[in-house]
Length: 259
Length: 116
Image (cartoon, rainbow over all chains, first blue to last red; front, side):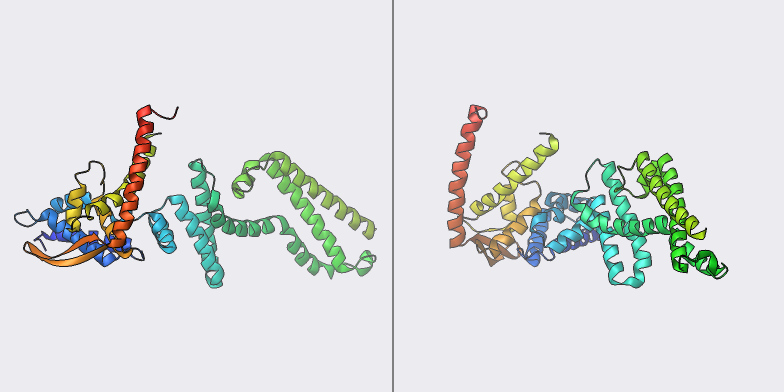
């Protein structure tokens, strides 16, 4: 091999490492053969040099060869190389989508890590959505990678947000039931009373949340993006109206049976 | 077509032409890899990234269109020479015929200044 300075030797080793990594797993070429040909090419280009080859001279030859990452079209790579290539070098939004899906998948397979991986998957998914919006693009195929984490977290958030009065009321009401004289609710059983109280509490809560959502629809759009992009003030009002119906129904029933 | 579109078009055109040129370069003589690169350098605009030639050579060999022989070189280590197989020559003849037909057809359209 041509004599080189230590810096040039290091640059050559780095280049050959890239070459080996780029050709790994590719069935239609022989990586060792390609490497041997490339080394012969470099020797040929530097054969006229007197004295040790400097790094700058070597880099001129390597620039003529080009980056090994671009030698083989993506479509000819094995599927796992395309995925890892996208993760390593692909557009940010595709890497974020893969990260979101991968973190969620690992978290579901290893539930002990879900408490850490689910927030990671959610943040990566929201970042992917935001990146697509900034670029003015549709999510397209990426939604299959991004939506699972978003839907799972939003389902948990929505359940807590909309239904927290139910277990709270049932739990508190259960404790209070023992203090209430039994003949006051003679027409209904204790759990039916608690159920109505839970419906009443939920209705009141939905009136509150609906009113807030009607006055600040952008909060709901931001909270449940990208699924809530069409949420408007009237959607919040409808929500509050449902709450009114629940509250009136449960309140009236409790009034009637307590009389 | 913007600059990027033009670059993409030229890249695709070069890719298709490069393999044809490599096969023709080794059809009537034996060349080692670096010699093939130097031969193709004479075609302006054909080779942008010289390294792309080596995976193509490896693939031609795997597809049995080319084979290699190792020969001692007075100038240094033994060299690996590429040349066409019979199968490669048959395929090259088909490719050259197709290229000529395509080139003639495109030239006629270009000479007329586009489709009327």
